[in-house]
Image (tube, rainbow, N blue to C red; front, side, top):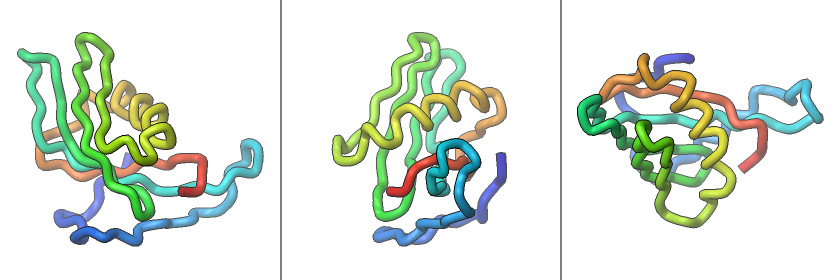
Length: 108
């Protein structure tokens, strides 16, 4: 997991970062940028924003229920599974106000 700079560029974002071709199934890779806006251990939830290529989504993750809500619907199917895996793997390391990245094995 890599920390990204303190400020994310304003929308529209043209972040598509091809980092080569994945060794698995020769899929291109896109870097997704995650910003955590709220985190509550007592309520068991986290909210934030995800940017990948020209898309931006807002998410609300209730980790006690393992429920992930993503808006808007446009492109949601592309990001839901990889974002869910990222949040489950890194949840204890994510802090409000923190900016993070992960790689999606697809071209958006």
